[in-house]
Length: 271
Image (tube, rainbow, N blue to C red; front, side, top):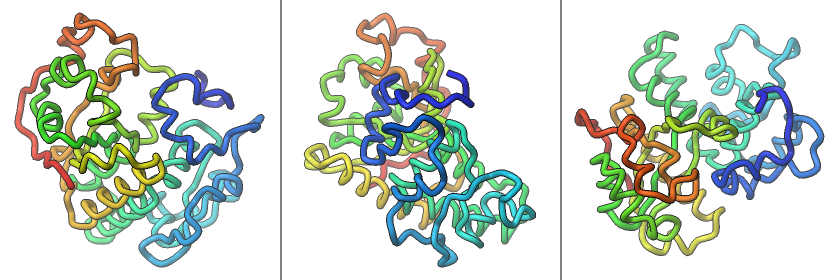
């Protein structure tokens, strides 16, 4: 799919887009949503860490404060610069679904820029990877999250296939990952935060689930829990049952995609 051609039927292209239904702002649109339209789906009381309300602004020659870096403009002015393309469209939707996490990602970026300047720190690298390519693996069974940590893909995706959507699920948070799923391919990989929940989580509505995960992620970021990319766990996205033609064991035996663990990481299981 071309990055610059709007398609109001995009949500039919992959099951992961069903997670966006609570910010379903695209019905009936014949072109990219305007910033004003997207803003209607933000929480009414959403503010940047500096205290200014979050708004979407077009990234064109009318963009205010062009001298500010993207993250600085959000922190200092509350302005999220937004282009008419898939990347920024999905970014806007993630602001609507994970507002407190996005505010905290921005606050952490701004703090590092203030202290160290614009060259990226290890923390800013990790924040960017989560923001762009992140997913949240949530499970009510700790052993399933341990399988993610162990790269035990055959166990996780095949032998525990029946557990998906009832005891474990993959929630999209990275907007570039969503963009990637418009045209998925074997090799598509995300970087995961792991969250353990009570079994009752899977009885919640989708909106309640997003609210819970938003709270967990924002709190983790607030307390410096993403100091480097070593705190994120690689995840072969197309292993998730029903997210590809993966209804055979042979698919999971492709070791170039479902790679074995080759080093220890600093990934923690969050609650």
